[in-house]
Length: 559
Image 1 (cartoon, rainbow, N blue to C red):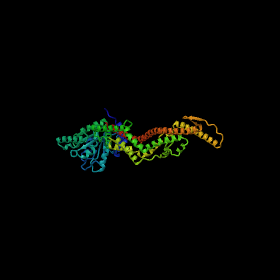
Image 2 (cartoon, one colour; image 1 turned 135 degrees about the vertical axis):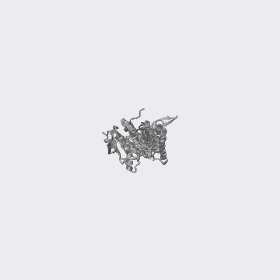
Image 3 (cartoon, rainbow, N blue to C red; image 1 turned 45 degrees about the vertical axis):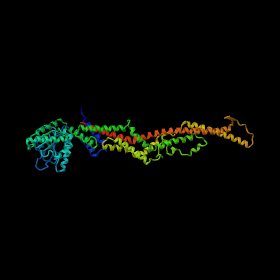
Image 4 (tube, rainbow, N blue to C red; image 1 turned 90 degrees about the horizontal axis):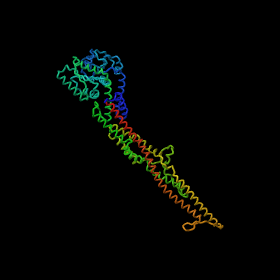
């Protein structure tokens, strides 16, 4: 199955680097961006030319090989070390390569002899030079050239400097690398074969098994044609530049994965690296499902929402809703003789600066709901920490830290946000039941009856006091006895008013509990929304970011 294109891998590397910003070390992120930038520049330059570089240690014979390939003495070969101080280029059919060499910052250029059209061969300074500027120049150009030709010699081919500093870190670059064992003319024939086998063994240990190894002598010319043919084959394909960029992308992506605590440094994209990345991505997806909108979100959100509700004073507000309902019911349906006394008691909700919330008015300032106690704050912080730990479980260290930070990133806003959620939640306390008005009218009618009876009796008392003729007073049979209508109206109105007031208070108690439960559900829903916005959503975003990062890394490293 054909892997993604170079453009797709570059885009994936850029995405991974962008996602890793602020989460992973700046050096690895900057290196990934630098690879993408370098690839963009190289693709815009001549793709008909292949830039190959001869790199090696002091005394390896790079310059002699450079001259042997160019079929002319272009580089100075001497006994004093180091001889090569700056890179120089030999060009075969170099028309159109000027901009490419300008980008490489190689000012010294020579026309070479022979048939290697499209090749630009660089002779680099010694990578182990005592001059720091020489080593820096080697490091710079090793990162830029299309094809690397490492020139080793029988005395120092196993030197740790070249293997640990260059070959091993370039393990993904086997497709754009050739290793030359120079100066074989100094060895017996049997020793040459043993040295070449040992070089191949060391390269395999570096992750570069399969890299072509050519034994030659630049002084005698033995094996030079084999190297020339190999270079001609690579140049003719016109693909070394793309293979080099692809290897750079894979290395940068593997380095990002390594510092991200994921798959580690992949050397060649082996099965172990891919398996590790798959396990890491699956862990990320599982945690994302746990914190996301699926069935498991309730298990994580439930203790969080409970702790936030306690910190927001929801139980106190729910209790106040029930009390306020009963208070207002007494004011609306109580016995008119005594209900006015209720008005001197403070409304439980208004005392908390609540009771609106459904009328669209802007809430100004905080409510008067008491702030969370130290215990409630500790419980809320513990619940947030539990969510963060559950979400970060199974993630690599840097990303687990990012998830935990995301969970706590907005907790400083929680007190004000929770208070505002309580203040803006419609508690239903402003909507008076219709029966209140009906009962209130009945109460006033009974009060009017009671007053009428009282006035009637008062009139009879005055007439008796003035010894005026007593008018006939109608009576009504009540329980087998006759009772004057004025007395019946007075006592009946008062008694009926008190009974209705007591029944109304009982109904108000039931209604208060029902309204408190409804308000509790509304408040808990508002608090749950705050928990989602302030804690769960940042965690989900960070998990989604990690999942995209892992997918981008997998895309960038898949050749």
